[in-house]
Length: 203
Image 1 (cartoon, rainbow, N blue to C red):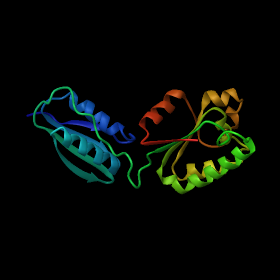
Image 2 (cartoon, rainbow, N blue to C red; image 1 turned 135 degrees about the horizontal axis):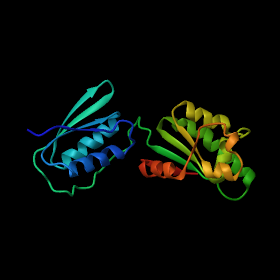
Image 3 (spheres, rainbow, N blue to C red; image 1 turned 120 degrees about the horizontal axis):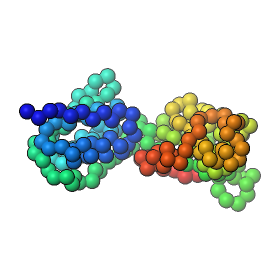
Image 4 (cartoon, one colour; image 1 turned 90 degrees about the vertical axis):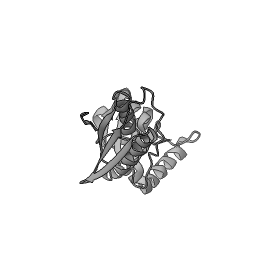
């Protein structure tokens, strides 16, 4: 009797749960794999992927978490088909906002500051879809004390979006000690977020 393996994907953003499931299935023969996720979009994506590989899947919801029992009847080789994922769902935080300047657009900087303020004001209408707001280069100026849009960024953070500022950029402008919202991040963490984003919007 084969032993059931468990794969805990709670806290992972799309598409990581499916990629981890793919890796686990590639490394196992016939048997059962229990995948635990904490959102419906990940549950749907993992189930669809496993079924596309010829596996049977049973899903149980337990207190807001989803346990998917993936049964693999026979070894299918080390190469599985690439997953097809729909990372966006009506309530999913799948969007990353990347801001690399304190002004929006090129041309008149005064106009660019007005546009940036309007942009961040309007983002609040889509706050439930935003997982991260990443600030780089002069964009980090938006997140420091005295910024005219500091409250807009704090508002996004209050409803669940993570505001991250590039540490190298803050150091370059001498602003690290003046950060007024969010946290300091690094290039590796930023790239991991960008690669895992369901949707990326640059400003």
